[in-house]
Length: 357
Image (cartoon, rainbow, N blue to C red):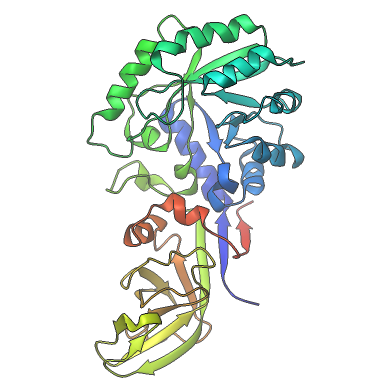
């Protein structure tokens, strides 16, 4: 059996959720959209169910998967609904729903529902991706109340640059939100992972931790609270070949890497078809047989090469950690010119194994 696998530490997941609750001082929806960022939404939800105040997903298909697995906790649809016909299912399965556009508000007004809805009304505070404008917000709130179809409203927005600790944008967005919510009697939700970790003065009744649940920092620089996170996923494989090469020998497609000296080169059963980033360059860290080394040459579809010159005890079958507790996913992402969100979500083909139930 091919040795590539992703080990998912559910105890670390619970630790990170509890840290989000501690730092935010708020209730927290565990964001498990996109199959829990590649970690397995159902298994992660079941692991968090005793702790979590609720969950957040992108769309109704993801929510219904949780309900089918027996998850009874609140589930928020972060993108809301895409067609008015979904409102019946939202009511039937007691889902919470973001309203971020006037057409959604109008659909609620015009569509019969048998159970009052729980709505999170989104304000565009400057990201300009989704949300009612500040000029529309108070009227939207009043229209929801007047519709008679809404049992609860939570006021929300989303920060565009909270992962950049030195910029003023987050404070500016917060000011827009505070002005727009004046006179609206409802709970609010502002804090995503970077806000929970890096903006303690941002207060909200509901936090929405996402990437921090999985133990990856949203920041490109060291940050004290992010250092308390525990990596949840360890991407593992084994060496399937070891060879000795002389100086000046090319390794991998295109011959972009040539050995600078006599070298030992290992081949790992892991490639971009598994979700390892193809753009990861020579020098990207990896752990082989407990020792830190680097990948060399281009990442292939099913394999990649590593430098074993300083790992003399490595042999065929030796374990390899591509990212996890010793090589952070954020470090691999930086080397590859991307973010940990993407490399987690790109995981495929690799079977997941769960520990820490």
